Image 1 (tube, one colour):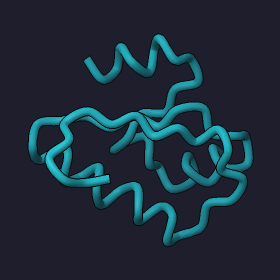
Image 2: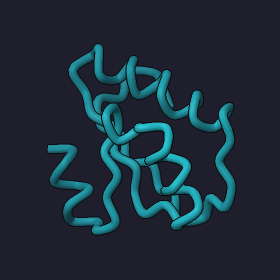
Image 3: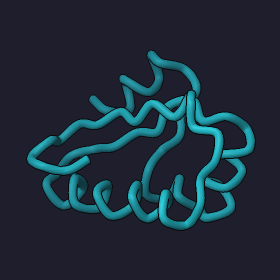
Amino acid sequence: MGGTAKKLLVDMQNVSFLGSMGLRSLVLPAQAVSRRGGKVVLFAPVKMVEDVLRASNIQAVIPIHHDMAEALAALA
């Protein structure tokens, strides 16, 4: 993630593990996108990964959606 993008949907469907470095690699670019007035959405993390995301309170920075229509609407 990065560059000049203002809308990013991160497809998490095939992510089976997420550690602290993975969290950092999501949060830092999302903060940069937010500073540019953009939005980032995480799409469909598996339960174990979503548990890690929620334990870190990442949804305060990056919303999590399991429905594609909702995820896309959140980027609008």
